[in-house]
Image 1: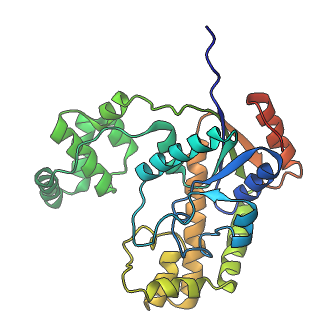
Image 2 (image 1 turned 135 degrees about the horizontal axis):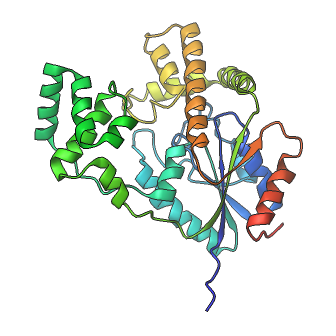
Image 3 (image 1 turned 180 degrees about the vertical axis):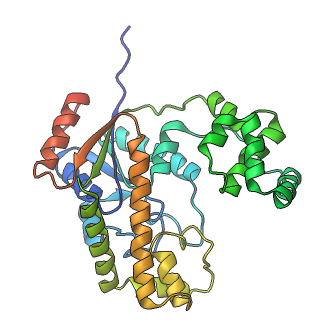
Length: 317
């Protein structure tokens, strides 16, 4: 008996300012599909300019799921996203449409595809014990201790990243199993879709940097500082919240708090955005089963459609 083919889904990933949203909207114009945002900042209300959120007019024409679903005071985790997006994808498929997931939060995509290892909760006593030893001998010594029991994790983690080194050793001391073993035991929670994955990026890094700088300048012209000022003046938000730590928002917040001058805020905001883009590209270079697209390709949509037609059944509008 033949198996029922899995329903299709499309992922559009890429660094910030690479043209992901424009590609997704072009596919929306062409295919029977619905757009789902994969962005850890777009989930927050009242954070529009600095997140490059589509405007109200754009959202009216190109509706996106999972935008404006949290107040900035509320955390939103990768686990929250996975639960929300799977329910959303199921509804989209039930309507006879293809879910098109678009965004730059690579951790969310990874979490959706793989799930997470079943790790123990933090153990305060063990954590204090590790911290005391680190205080006496230094974090490189703790990293060496981790390398003795979990060489794979030690190789992956920087000795100067105490939070992750501590957590990896803590997992071993609490459970008797290494972090590597926990992840190996985590069966891949494959999602019930036939997924076509795209990565979109300019050919030259210089082009991406120029796009980032121009976008940041435009955000400031559009009232980015005023947007953050409204959040700053609420009184219930602070720098340690995930929403306020978002790239751009943190730098403007520090400017409003008197920690940075206006010019320093611009410089640091652009640099932080470039660093984010670099991390996103690094994630993607190690990603499997990716179809790469160039942002400047004059036949971008046709290129994407040809790849899609070769891999999944498409219903055109």
